[in-house]
Length: 632
Image 1 (cartoon, rainbow, N blue to C red):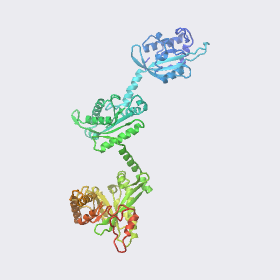
Image 2 (cartoon, helix red, strand yellow):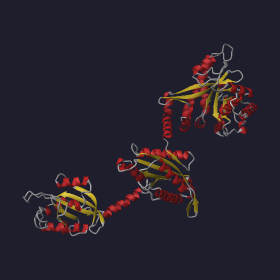
Image 3 (cartoon, helix red, strand yellow):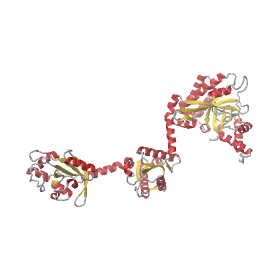
């Protein structure tokens, strides 16, 4: 019979054949076993399935030739032996308990797989089945019929299963363990039992991604790309073997998919061990790869995570590793980065904000504050800049630098920008109506580049001005220098259309971006807002004048003066940002700056504070701002 047979013959059919005679099967002396008539005795003796009759005490009554052949011994020598020892049923508590239950008649069957050793020393995998023999009831002596033990050689099937599992659990390109096997090992390593015998109770992962591998595939083809992956796998394997730890052995190297690999360090000793491994990986990949007639170089980014196993899940560990890998990519590639809980908390907060941005617009969680733009010569409020705030129910009041970039990334800046534009214009119109004797102030609204590309900004502005009744010249739109300089196509058309409408266009943070002065003359810009970094330089000169020992640097003042003169020659007005001291204001006024903005005049305040500020002027008098008047 083939060695992979599971012995399909049921015990119920063989039961009567081995329980009807006391002498035909030559049981051991004193045995209670009973055998059947000669025909059934012959079936038992010559059956290709290895079998033995076991009495109620668990001792072998008789074994057939197939069992002797399977175990490499004389079947007669098996009689009288302990059946459980013959097929290794006592090696684990669960199997031993189940066997005893069958022996006592409390269980109908036991089937298990065991690795057995033949008399010649060779091993084999066997499927062992133990079933009660059927009692025909014709003996009349009240003796229990015993058990039928059958053993089938499943070594070939086991070997086939092992080969199939290997194929299933390994990557065909690199022959490394694949994602399934990696997570299987990771899950097992995180179980508490894995560290009950002198382990450290820690685990680490180096998660790496090849930098620019797509370019290799696109340039040289997938065949070369696969060969490069296989070569990388060889170097990673050697690196892991060299870094083998005495307690836990070599790290598991796996290909998780694409150009992503991972090294799993079980029973790690701390972050230093993982950092050393990550450094060794980068060093191993540094020499060029010789692939036939090609010489290719590749680098990798590595995310490193090392922590206690307690309270850690495979999903959480790999999420942390993936996040850290992203940081390594963002930090410049060709490097390793260690997981930082604080940085991760900021990321989680960022994700939480991104997920609630759009609903927050609908729930009305945003509000505008306004910061005055003050004339440098007369101190009169010429306009205000609208600055958005997010009244977040969990994180409190958030400044725009916490969420505007997120809004630009996911596109929610478009509906948010419409809300800002509409709210600011409505408020400017209310101030105009509330103070009819005062010259109306303009409102300045920041506009993101994505609003220009993803929405019909011209139509939005025209509709808003019509709804609110605000004159176009009382609206100023601010774009950053990097967004405006080099504008062509649709952005330039939008800017020109808005300018033709009468809306003022301002370049924010001027002097820190491209500063393409030649291109500046071709843009429909009317205002330059100087970046606060130039104005803050004036403060150091003032401190030096006061005798603090600081060396005054006139460079900032010279640069600002040149930019102001250039702007005026181009017909533009200039606003200085971040004006915080009266000395700065004096210097800017002397240079010729037109308007100033900063805490010297007022912090961003609620609309009613601006109304109060405008109300300070008497009939026919200017609405002025003295230093600190608008401060809350």
